[in-house]
Length: 521
Image (tube, rainbow, N blue to C red; front, side, top):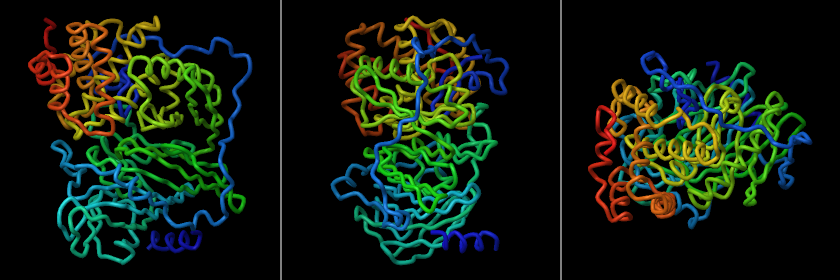
């Protein structure tokens, strides 16, 4: 690995605090560059620990000792039975077609990454099936990264790499057959501009470094391509394994479970992470810095990991308290947690993101007195377990998470976000005028408050019509009946109609398509 780094270096030288998915604060959404969308007063949310008697201490991960040769071990490839979990039906996105490649269905990504604070070395193995007979495969990969070699099933193949697209020229590939694509690349990643009017994406989406050089990512609707080759679209979910080498005091945090952590040659740490259920690329995360893990438990017995750097250790007790309360409340009202692990990583920036099983939160989001954590936890059910098939359906994520946020605030005696539904209506109406209706929004205004508040108000109207018991059953079975699926408006509407025995089609269409906030009948 070190020799490769030396060769690669030579090659390179030649108002409203809505918690938005993919981004943390809706205050930024409601007000960014649009003063007319005035934000209401922020509610209080995260409570202080009631009994801070002893300070939290880091919990060492319970992991085996690894081999010093770990970084040279072969890639991790799941068994065929596991790979079947990663099968999807990829589509071309109607809003962001440049970030969708429907000719390829990725089943599994193995990411072997080496980051020294300046240069990223990647050896990536992509297990995929072609969705049709073809002689070329395209993946999204930032042009900031130089591709050294590409191999298909072990044999070198030709490729082109330009305009953030890696096109692999293959021998004839037959639909539905599995193949392995290995890609070696090197470079210094950089974020990509966000298609948004919000301010919280900051420098952009994807691989970002804070002022101290620590790495973090927020990448909805896309941005994973800034640091690995990927079909960067929610319709193509896949399994993931990552083996990440860092230097000095830095360690890596990724989605899923930390299976192994090894210190090598005194200055390198190798962390091996495993994700055991399919995940959309925008829900992947990586953070690199001097992290320590703290573990808290909920009343229901779920362990939640909190990864923080030294400057954020004072946030741990509040995170544990809020995390336990939010999780237990969600299990009661949304149903059993749909994954096997859960964690939170605190990073720089000013946003928050429901990255699957490892929620990414800026320290600013953690410090704000609102229900940011509950919102991002709710997304594990609504957005992560059940994912929109394309980006027209972002309202499916945000409407549910926003509604659960205010439901939680009301149930726990907190000031409801925005203080009232009438305030929500005012902000939603202004956002529709500037960004379009939630079901047909302006692609340059991704994740504005229109896809949060209007769909949440729609869910509340459905609840008012069918009553609390039937509504609670509906939102639980929506997840269990569509777990690990990609869905759209048609699927949602048919399901609501079928489960309630009533025709809500006109109501749903009105809330999603109206240029102004609909009246509540």
